[in-house]
Image (tube, rainbow, N blue to C red; front, side, top):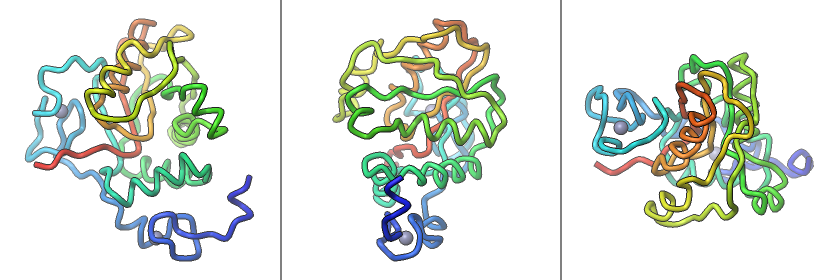
Length: 218
Ligand SMILES: [Zn+2]
Ligand SMILES: [Zn+2]
């Protein structure tokens, strides 16, 4: 792996030493309760539904994340995903294990990458994270999903919602309860679409866990 041979620099602040220095690791914006019980958005007090998820059909029962998506987290996620610093998956998984209670589910699965991106990157970051987390939680990690069409579009929230609807299908019968892993929760549309596909394939309850989560300014 290439990243073993390169001089180590913190991907967030650039200081020498480690890919994620202890100062930056310490300062990543952890998501703190109280949270919306359903979508995991930080809220003023514990609520069953929040402004962000009320009235939406989401498919998943709960969504949780370790950190809020800010500039530091953006740099970390970028280095992990695009620069192929795969060992960052270990750091990222450790942060999830530290912040998110283990899901009470039968198996772990992950959002599949579209073939073009996978070819470019040579790895699926969500799968790497899922495998690390499954090992930590002592759960099986099963590839259960595929994309029905290519082209995961980046852009506005509305674009994400449109582009992922019906974009996934299950490739095998899903266990009764599953957690689906992804890198970043933006609008919840990807988590919702994968949860819907897993439920269509037999899952009764789907949880979603991501490393980071976009936070709305309140
Ligand atoms: Zn740093
Ligand atoms: Zn909510």
